[in-house]
Image 1 (tube, rainbow, N blue to C red):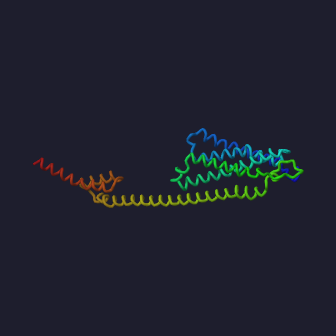
Image 2: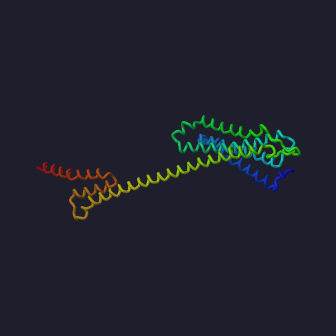
Image 3: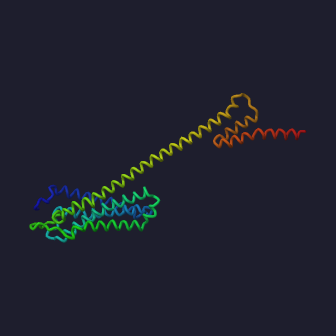
Length: 283
């Protein structure tokens, strides 16, 4: 092949490309099957994930074989078919990149704008966003083939760099369609990571304060109970009313302290009233 377009390690290159294609097809096909067969997985978030999975399946099924063929210079003597293959290659890779950007934007809204999420990201709006994503991929990927670059006069091979304008490939496809979405995804996920880590620290601080308050209340409860009502046990024989108070304290030690104290405070009075009734009945 002229111009040095033949890969130096053709066998390794083709095997690697086909292995990546097979893994992409199988893995993403499992994602689509899981969402299709499980109704609980049919959520707005998974709409975007399925769109990304479909884009990656098409990349493995169509775009990678097209890349292999065009890197080998095929098809020969057929410029229209060459343009179609290269168009599929660019459109499908662009759809995969934009689908990843759509997933990042959806996660950003779900995590950082939860109150607006249900209103903005309805199933109808999600489908509209996916339609816009695929439409942009189709437009940006098809632009260079509206005015294809002429091949060298003595070349009959479908060479990517001979058909596609390099100015488009470098300044538009790389910087605008690849680098900018990549930077946007990096910024989105970085913001999500920083916000989530900040929230986790705040939750840990609140939980620690709540545990300290709980432990303090329990300590005050034990100190109040042992300090006020355990003392009669150390004084030797106790009258019946004091024993009753002590037993009541032991029975209700897990409840409210005020309720226990109130219960105990009433017990001696009731005993006195009973004794008075007995004396009146004897008389």
